[in-house]
Length: 185
Image (cartoon, rainbow, N blue to C red):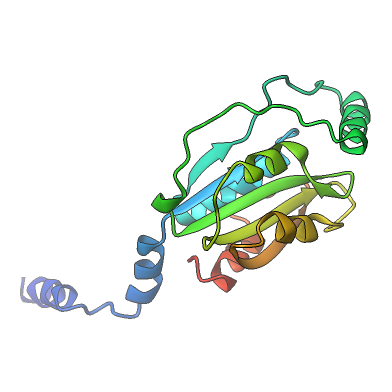
Protein backbone atom coordinates (compact mmCIF):
# COMPACT_ATOMS: atom_id res chain seq x y z
CA UNK A 1 0.00 0.00 0.00
CA UNK A 2 2.85 2.38 0.78
CA UNK A 3 4.35 1.87 -2.70
CA UNK A 4 1.00 2.62 -4.30
CA UNK A 5 0.61 5.87 -2.32
CA UNK A 6 4.14 6.91 -3.24
CA UNK A 7 3.45 6.20 -6.90
CA UNK A 8 0.17 8.16 -6.87
CA UNK A 9 1.88 11.04 -5.07
CA UNK A 10 4.71 10.98 -7.59
CA UNK A 11 2.20 11.12 -10.46
CA UNK A 12 0.21 13.92 -8.82
CA UNK A 13 3.38 16.00 -8.49
CA UNK A 14 4.12 15.65 -12.17
CA UNK A 15 6.52 12.71 -11.98
CA UNK A 16 6.13 12.07 -15.68
CA UNK A 17 7.31 15.48 -16.81
CA UNK A 18 9.15 13.92 -19.75
CA UNK A 19 5.71 13.14 -21.22
CA UNK A 20 4.31 16.63 -20.76
CA UNK A 21 5.85 18.33 -23.84
CA UNK A 22 4.55 15.73 -26.30
CA UNK A 23 1.13 15.41 -24.73
CA UNK A 24 0.80 19.13 -24.11
CA UNK A 25 1.69 20.12 -27.67
CA UNK A 26 -0.75 17.65 -29.18
CA UNK A 27 -3.49 18.53 -26.71
CA UNK A 28 -3.21 22.25 -27.50
CA UNK A 29 -3.20 21.85 -31.27
CA UNK A 30 -6.60 21.88 -32.91
CA UNK A 31 -6.18 20.34 -36.35
CA UNK A 32 -8.46 20.19 -39.39
CA UNK A 33 -7.77 18.20 -42.53
CA UNK A 34 -9.48 19.31 -45.71
CA UNK A 35 -8.97 16.86 -48.55
CA UNK A 36 -10.21 15.73 -51.92
CA UNK A 37 -9.88 12.04 -52.78
CA UNK A 38 -10.99 10.21 -55.89
CA UNK A 39 -9.43 6.78 -55.31
CA UNK A 40 -9.10 6.73 -51.52
CA UNK A 41 -5.34 7.36 -51.41
CA UNK A 42 -5.67 10.94 -50.20
CA UNK A 43 -8.39 9.85 -47.75
CA UNK A 44 -5.87 7.42 -46.22
CA UNK A 45 -3.45 10.32 -45.71
CA UNK A 46 -6.19 12.38 -44.03
CA UNK A 47 -7.07 9.45 -41.76
CA UNK A 48 -3.42 9.00 -40.81
CA UNK A 49 -3.21 12.67 -39.78
CA UNK A 50 -6.37 12.16 -37.73
CA UNK A 51 -4.83 9.10 -36.06
CA UNK A 52 -1.87 11.13 -34.79
CA UNK A 53 -3.66 14.41 -34.01
CA UNK A 54 -7.37 13.76 -33.45
CA UNK A 55 -8.04 16.09 -36.39
CA UNK A 56 -11.48 16.89 -37.74
CA UNK A 57 -11.82 15.67 -41.33
CA UNK A 58 -13.59 17.60 -44.07
CA UNK A 59 -13.95 15.98 -47.49
CA UNK A 60 -14.35 18.20 -50.52
CA UNK A 61 -16.88 16.64 -52.90
CA UNK A 62 -18.07 17.73 -56.31
CA UNK A 63 -21.77 18.24 -56.93
CA UNK A 64 -21.50 16.23 -60.14
CA UNK A 65 -19.27 13.21 -59.47
CA UNK A 66 -16.45 12.22 -61.77
CA UNK A 67 -16.77 8.84 -63.53
CA UNK A 68 -15.82 5.79 -61.48
CA UNK A 69 -13.27 4.59 -64.04
CA UNK A 70 -9.80 6.11 -64.14
CA UNK A 71 -9.32 6.77 -67.88
CA UNK A 72 -12.59 8.69 -68.47
CA UNK A 73 -11.86 10.74 -65.35
CA UNK A 74 -8.39 11.72 -66.55
CA UNK A 75 -9.78 12.85 -69.91
CA UNK A 76 -12.45 14.99 -68.25
CA UNK A 77 -9.99 16.47 -65.74
CA UNK A 78 -7.51 17.36 -68.48
CA UNK A 79 -10.24 19.08 -70.51
CA UNK A 80 -11.51 20.99 -67.44
CA UNK A 81 -7.99 22.18 -66.64
CA UNK A 82 -7.19 23.20 -70.23
CA UNK A 83 -10.47 25.11 -70.62
CA UNK A 84 -10.61 26.55 -67.10
CA UNK A 85 -13.86 24.74 -66.32
CA UNK A 86 -14.70 24.87 -62.63
CA UNK A 87 -16.72 21.95 -61.35
CA UNK A 88 -19.01 22.98 -58.48
CA UNK A 89 -18.32 21.54 -55.06
CA UNK A 90 -20.75 20.69 -52.28
CA UNK A 91 -20.64 23.33 -49.57
CA UNK A 92 -19.82 22.48 -45.97
CA UNK A 93 -19.46 24.59 -42.85
CA UNK A 94 -15.85 25.32 -41.94
CA UNK A 95 -14.56 27.93 -39.50
CA UNK A 96 -10.77 28.27 -39.72
CA UNK A 97 -10.66 30.21 -36.45
CA UNK A 98 -11.48 26.95 -34.61
CA UNK A 99 -8.13 25.44 -35.66
CA UNK A 100 -4.46 26.02 -34.97
CA UNK A 101 -3.35 23.89 -37.92
CA UNK A 102 -5.07 23.33 -41.24
CA UNK A 103 -3.87 20.43 -43.38
CA UNK A 104 -4.76 20.46 -47.08
CA UNK A 105 -4.36 17.18 -48.94
CA UNK A 106 -4.84 16.46 -52.63
CA UNK A 107 -4.14 13.87 -55.28
CA UNK A 108 -1.86 15.10 -58.05
CA UNK A 109 -4.00 15.76 -61.13
CA UNK A 110 -2.12 16.46 -64.34
CA UNK A 111 0.84 17.72 -62.29
CA UNK A 112 -1.29 20.03 -60.10
CA UNK A 113 -3.50 20.31 -57.02
CA UNK A 114 -6.89 18.77 -57.84
CA UNK A 115 -9.39 21.27 -59.21
CA UNK A 116 -12.03 20.58 -56.52
CA UNK A 117 -9.56 21.39 -53.72
CA UNK A 118 -8.39 24.51 -55.58
CA UNK A 119 -12.03 25.62 -55.82
CA UNK A 120 -12.50 25.11 -52.07
CA UNK A 121 -9.31 27.02 -51.19
CA UNK A 122 -10.29 29.98 -53.38
CA UNK A 123 -13.53 30.29 -51.40
CA UNK A 124 -11.76 30.49 -48.01
CA UNK A 125 -10.00 33.15 -45.96
CA UNK A 126 -6.87 31.40 -44.73
CA UNK A 127 -4.59 34.45 -44.45
CA UNK A 128 -2.34 34.18 -41.42
CA UNK A 129 -3.36 30.57 -40.75
CA UNK A 130 -0.74 27.84 -40.25
CA UNK A 131 -1.25 25.42 -43.16
CA UNK A 132 0.43 22.14 -43.98
CA UNK A 133 0.10 20.81 -47.51
CA UNK A 134 0.36 17.29 -48.89
CA UNK A 135 -0.18 15.37 -52.09
CA UNK A 136 -0.59 11.73 -53.03
CA UNK A 137 0.45 10.45 -56.43
CA UNK A 138 0.60 7.36 -58.57
CA UNK A 139 4.10 7.92 -59.90
CA UNK A 140 4.42 11.61 -60.76
CA UNK A 141 5.73 12.76 -57.40
CA UNK A 142 5.52 16.37 -56.26
CA UNK A 143 5.17 17.90 -59.75
CA UNK A 144 3.67 21.44 -59.35
CA UNK A 145 1.52 20.80 -56.28
CA UNK A 146 3.67 22.77 -53.82
CA UNK A 147 3.91 25.70 -56.24
CA UNK A 148 0.13 25.63 -56.64
CA UNK A 149 -0.38 25.66 -52.88
CA UNK A 150 2.07 28.55 -52.47
CA UNK A 151 0.12 30.63 -55.02
CA UNK A 152 -3.29 29.69 -53.60
CA UNK A 153 -2.20 30.31 -50.00
CA UNK A 154 -0.02 33.40 -50.44
CA UNK A 155 -1.17 34.99 -47.16
CA UNK A 156 -0.90 31.82 -45.06
CA UNK A 157 2.01 30.56 -42.98
CA UNK A 158 3.06 27.37 -44.75
CA UNK A 159 4.79 24.45 -43.10
CA UNK A 160 6.67 21.81 -45.03
CA UNK A 161 5.03 19.78 -47.80
CA UNK A 162 4.55 16.01 -47.77
CA UNK A 163 4.44 13.90 -50.96
CA UNK A 164 3.47 10.23 -50.71
CA UNK A 165 3.07 7.50 -53.29
CA UNK A 166 -0.38 5.89 -53.25
CA UNK A 167 -2.12 5.19 -49.97
CA UNK A 168 -0.57 5.24 -46.49
CA UNK A 169 -1.35 3.24 -43.37
CA UNK A 170 -3.12 4.89 -40.48
CA UNK A 171 0.11 4.66 -38.47
CA UNK A 172 2.42 5.83 -41.28
CA UNK A 173 5.85 6.75 -39.90
CA UNK A 174 6.25 9.16 -42.83
CA UNK A 175 3.12 11.10 -41.82
CA UNK A 176 4.12 10.99 -38.16
CA UNK A 177 7.59 12.37 -38.94
CA UNK A 178 6.11 15.17 -41.08
CA UNK A 179 3.74 16.17 -38.28
CA UNK A 180 6.60 16.16 -35.76
CA UNK A 181 8.82 18.23 -38.06
CA UNK A 182 6.08 20.87 -38.22
CA UNK A 183 5.48 20.89 -34.45
CA UNK A 184 1.97 19.48 -34.73
CA UNK A 185 2.71 16.48 -32.49
